[in-house]
Length: 267
Image (cartoon, rainbow, N blue to C red):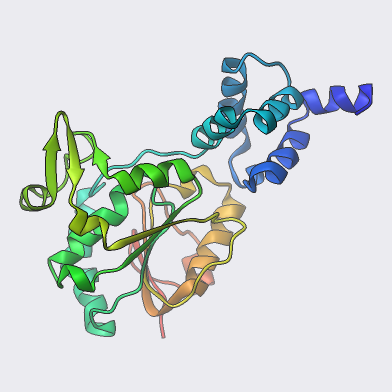
């Protein structure tokens, strides 16, 4: 790298985005730039290096720093039964409707599942309607560190605060100040790494759950993901999104809106 190119790399965020994509497969163009650049610049400062080029070199040569970067970059704020009113709608309307349409052999994908709170909540919610052994959740996230945490299944008191008391007593064990989720619940979830922007989406899902993640994406990236979810759903399948999100152009994509958080792919 000559001097001019070195100066460019040290200060050019566009160069940095391309370098990170080559290194991790994470497309930073999909995220709101000001917000993400601030987060990255803060992390670089904490790493005691100056310039994007030196930080990229650090990521290439220090595995711990690389893992720290990916973990820091992906937003992992999660809790069980987050926004409880929406989960009540899922329990009373959506799940019975899906069983009525497709039976109990439901294909369910928890996308951007973070530390597992969401897919485990889905298993517990479904357990009110069918035997546990019939439940299968496919759960994915970009960050393999949070997937590892999800597989452990140990949570703080704040994370489990919204779990219905009967389910908490049935499926959690108190371990010190934490709560360990039951192996019976964990067995029904298959975890895998997946990038919502660049990876292929499986198809034929009866329910896709992706909540409070796309708020960090650009409008273009959000729209691309909502279109991909639509194509991935089975006919009459449902997409469940978060409290902070909305699909403004849902009609153009092809969805029927059940309410602000549930969108159905029609016949």
